[in-house]
Length: 230
Image (cartoon, rainbow, N blue to C red; front, side, top):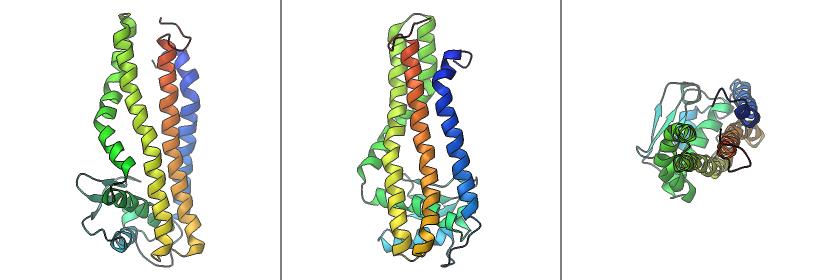
């Protein structure tokens, strides 16, 4: 695939968008990581306050290594924050921490899209791992059943990225509202924290676009989109 010039025609726009989105979120985070919130709360404290105010007391908050490795683990009910978020009282840290707390609130409230995304994880992982070899082995052997199976599996991975969009948007919306309502940031500070979350959301949009373009490439190469199988 990487040696196929046609692949780059399909993949290049998504790759460029993903690179720009990654650069945007890193620079936005770095910008507001230098600005301390007037509340003086760290990211860990802000997440705990948001959860407590919402009546969610069974979620642990832990420090995890890695830059912007922050995530919520629904299976363990653990909110894991990177050192730059856990220990910092910056507007960036509070925004990211509250976003992850938003996922915990989704879990506690049985948010439908979060449940759907969790259910899709096994199939999405399988699709990401097996779709490439099945598709290209199918092309080499002129086996359309294998080709179509590879496309079907990759479609499951694409569906996962699409379902992720409302999950991430909703978590950010909860965070933006809670940050002000809980007194974690002032109304004048809220836009700065929100800009970090908006930048992060663009990385998920980039993932959808990249996956969709890859699927179009598969369909083209399989002769299902006006292309040729060669």
